Length: 227
Image (cartoon, rainbow, N blue to C red; front, top):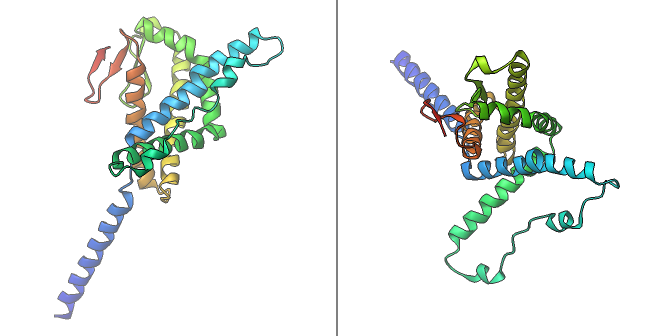
């Protein structure tokens, strides 16, 4: 009788531990905010960063034009009248998502590893765009670059693709860490693996939307198509 009781107690304890493990790994993932954060980072560090570099080369003093100063912090105006309306739950959620996206972008833009990755990606961007337009490479479902036609690339191009994927993995991995940090959740391997997978899928979706007509992209179902 005692043996049966102890077996039942042991089984219950194992079940409880398993349930706790599942709860621990269940991480909140704000997909929309993550997507906006990726877009903000691309705008700040990849696209506008290249434009800023070109402008500084043209300016002998190295000073930014006045128009650039006016654009600085894009603060969305909020009316105090909205605070008094009773049906603002959706508005509050939208602002919360905006704040989450901003916080993610700020967290990553202050990360030296991420800044280095974006700096390297910015330098590769012209050549990489050319490879996409040639149909030599495509965008995978994880947001990475995959060789599609080896007859159109050189060993240097293959090295570029490998380096580009390393930089993209750095961005995605740090995005996953930032999400856990903002969620005030422990950075366990299980939690990081779960969030990293979703962060990569969202990164890929962002890149698919930015892809130009004719580029090869991999859909979430694994099928390759030309956009």
